[in-house]
Length: 115
Length: 114
Image (cartoon, rainbow over all chains, first blue to last red; front, top):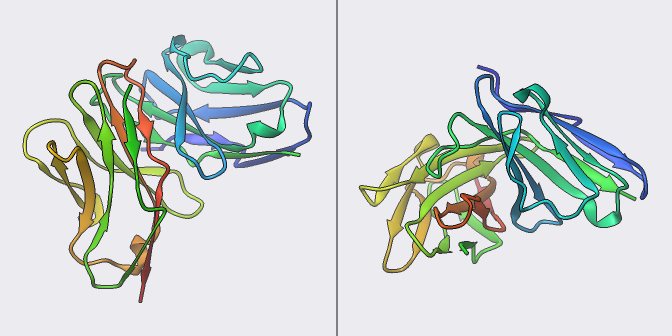
């Protein structure tokens, strides 16, 4: 069974540019999550999709971040315009059910560097 | 709101020795606790979780963790460390009372030396 995949693995952009990250969850997983780890700190929750609907986006830092999951399959996270503090590793995770005890399976992450 | 602390940034052990990676938590309700490991250039891999029941939870790769409610801890342990266990370990907690968000600790880098 294929795991969670993310593209690209690395992205280096300049401040003010736009970047789009993609996540393909495990097939059949309705729940998709985005997380971010900045500068060696803790991994922080960004948002949670159930199928194509945003269940919880309380962790999104500001309106420069836009997440979509059209058709309830893969998801994209767009940062526009990117700022220096957006640098970090963006992780995507998916799970079958969305309950508090359900295991989330993570992708390899996208390392974003904003210069 | 729930939170997790991993008090050690770095843990060094010799191969064959037991290892412990510490984690303490704070929640308003019942804690649901997880351990993940990140190997170099890889994503987070699930190791084990505590939901309810037996306080000693066994997971992948010979790891186990002990839930201690009185000390609000969930330390990760392995009886005999391998060099291949060297990685970054994350503890996480979820709580029904906080939007089901998963809160992670800052991570502990484990280095096992031959």
